[in-house]
Image 1 (cartoon, one colour):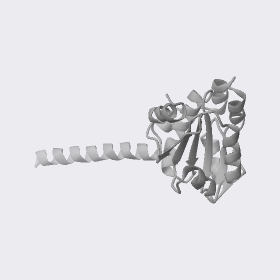
Image 2 (cartoon, helix red, strand yellow):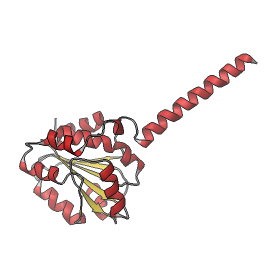
Image 3 (tube, rainbow, N blue to C red):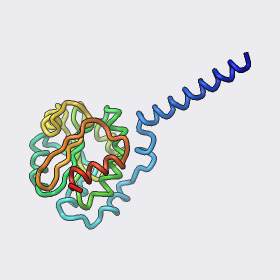
Image 4 (tube, rainbow, N blue to C red):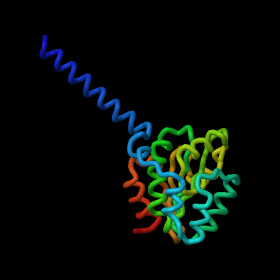
Length: 195
């Protein structure tokens, strides 16, 4: 009887540990949120960036109008540079979980690589703006409530999706969330920088 109670207690403890780990990863409260940077820290780290990238950093955390036309115009202005486009939505839990990775990698690589967001499918600017305020990034996002810009750029109706453009215009599309900053940085190097 006593041995059976010990086995049941150990099994219950193991389940609790698995649930805590799983919820932490799903909710993005692990690595993604524990080291959030402030806008001032991001500005300091990106000071002295080339003009085209500095223009993005000047719009850090902004929710820009323009939809598909605005995204395409920005991509045209960045032609010849490596670019990373992340499609996200404030209601999307996997998007929220990976946002900390985008914050860190965009700061670490933002002097060489352009980052742009597409807030695709949020019905209200207020929800998206509140999310960006609570979790700032070093680049702007384009507001895309109907999802047309996100679908056209990423060739997908799902979120999150990340598109990498190399300087020659080659494109690689990654479906789904990134599980770590290291994997995101590896893909930025591989697909945007060709390293």
